Amino acid sequence: MLRRPARLPPMNYRHHYHAGGAADLLKHLVLVHLVRRLQDKPTPLCYLDTHAGAGSYQLAHEMSQRTGEYARGVARLWGAQGLPGPLADLLRLIEACNPDGALRVYPGSPRVVRALLRPGDRMIACELHMKDVETLHDEFRGDPQVAVHRRDGYEGIKAFLPPKERRGLVLIDPPFERPDEFAAALAGLHTAHARWPTGCLALWYPIKGPVARGKLHAALMHGVIRRVLALELYTRLDDADGLGGSGMIVVNPPWRSDVVLRAALPALAARVADDDLDPAASTRTRVEWIVGE
Image (tube, rainbow, N blue to C red; front, side):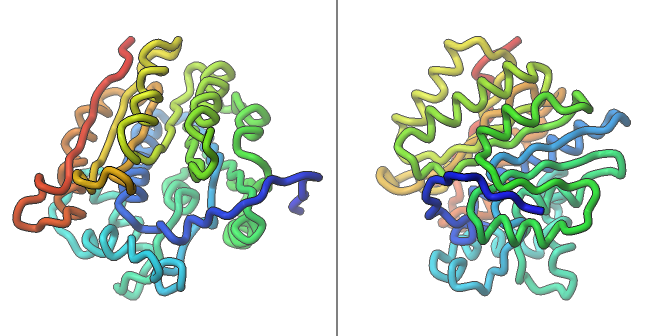
C-alpha cells in the first residue's frame, strides 16, 4: 500500500516530455554500464532511484509529441547496428520493450535497471508525483524485487542507505526545476557518500550554460569525495540559453569505466547530432576524472 506524506511540495515536472531524448540516452547508457560491471561479482546488489518517474513512456502520448525529444534521440538510434558494448546493450533493452519491432515505448530508469537485475538483486524507487508513482506502482505490482515509495528522493537517501547488501548503485536524477536544485543534488550526493562511502553513486545534471555546471564541478574538486568521474554529452554547442547537453557525475565507478564510456559516448553523439555530415559541429563528449584516488 502506498502511503501519502502529510505535506508534499507542488510537482509540475513530468519526465514524459523528455523521454527518449539525448539526455535520457546518456543517463541510461551509463546506468547499463554501471549495473553490468557491478554484476561482475556474484554477490547481490541494491539499486536506489531517488526520482524514479513513471517507469516507461508511450511515445505517441501528447507529452512526448509536444517536445519531440525522442525523435532527436532514441528514434535516431533505432535499428542501428555495430554499436559499442553498453550502447548496444541499451538498445537491446529498448527493443525488448517494443516486441513488435516498432518504436512505441521508451523505458525509464526503473524499467532499464529492472531488466538487468539478477534474482538476488533488488530495486528501491522513490517518486513524489502522484500520477507517476501510481503508474510506477502498477508497473511493478507483485514484483518482490522492487519496492516503490511515494516520498522525497533526498529523504530516501537517508532512509535506505546503506543497503543491507552493501553493494550497488544510487541514481540521483532530480527535475532541476527548483532554483537551488544543483545545491540540493550536491548535498544529496554528499549525504549518500557519507552514509555509504563504498557505494557507486551517480548524479545526472542538465547543462544550461557553464555557470551551474562549473560550480558543481568546482565544489567536487575541492570537496572530500574521491574517485569522481564526469561524463558529458553536448548536443547544442551554439545554444547559450536552452539545454546545451547533460552530464553525469559518477562516484566510485567500476574499474575501467572511463575507458569503456570514453569509447561509447562518441557513437551516441554521432547518432543524435543535428548535422549528419559533420557530427562534431553540433555534438561533443567529455569523459574526465574530476577527482582521483
